[in-house]
Amino acid sequence: MGVIIVEVMPKPEILDPQGKAILGAFPRLGFTDFVGVRQGKRFELTVDGAVTEAHLEQARKAAEELLSNPIIENVVSVRALED
Amino acid sequence: MGVIIVEVMPKPEILDPQGKAILGAFPRLGFTDFVGVRQGKRFELTVDGAVTEAHLEQARKAAEELLSNPIIENVVSVRALED
Amino acid sequence: MGVIIVEVMPKPEILDPQGKAILGAFPRLGFTDFVGVRQGKRFELTVDGAVTEAHLEQARKAAEELLSNPIIENVVSVRALED
Amino acid sequence: MGVIIVEVMPKPEILDPQGKAILGAFPRLGFTDFVGVRQGKRFELTVDGAVTEAHLEQARKAAEELLSNPIIENVVSVRALED
Image (cartoon, rainbow over all chains, first blue to last red; front, side, top):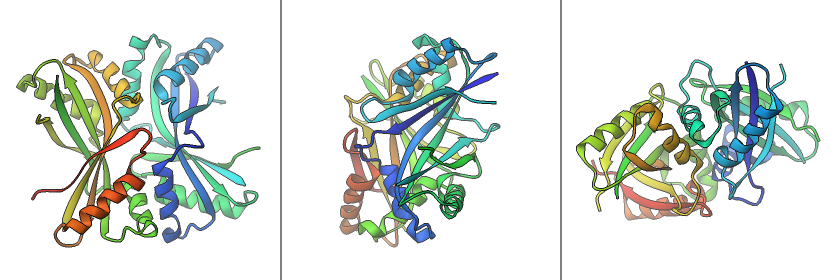
């Protein structure tokens, strides 16, 4: 079984309420080192057998069409998981 | 500015409704290569200056305490983003 | 077009990291009245024509099978949207 | 303890990848009645004592500033939970 990793993050200029909430909560929990937090998504797509270039091409399309919202998110990475 | 990446995924034995929905939607969109989909989260934590071991230690604690739900999720990776 | 509302919330005994983050962030933003925050999901399912009991029955099944994770969430409401 | 419900939904004109995925997955699971799905968020904010107008005002501000992303989401309801 091969696995393809797709990573999606909010665009830099977009407000990210979840990241903002986490950043705001950090100091009370003693986490004072962080000056920014962004929350995105990470998908694992499984294929039978080894990951091929055709699988990656399909994953890139799926990432644009179903796994991300192009208005607010960027697909930052589509790659085979190294064993 | 240094960036730490935290990756959180649903535990393998846990039902993942979002992944299941995506997998179910794929065939109608022409994506027929994938036999499994899991959806997790990816965080970018920013620190002033370079990422130190102390930053990573704090990120590991934050990942366990606030960025994941230990009942259903695993923290799969906490690492500095390579430039 | 009829609309069915499905509401899903984390179980009371379950840690809700997103709610916890929001609660932690509130004081710094000047929101000091709130002593608890839980974050759940709200779905709008659209049907052709008026909502029937059969539609609601199907929505209840969908809520249990695909819209919620029974390990950590409760379906708190499935109802037709009042016009 | 009083509870305020905040409901947030994606704007109608905005692509909602999660709703699209659920809609695409429905037919294979035998759910054939639904012609549209939108996924939003539902928050429960708890206050000490009964919910007052001042609490609701603070909840409305929190909904706009932290609980929603105004680029892609609308706050559709802020109200006290009826007992």
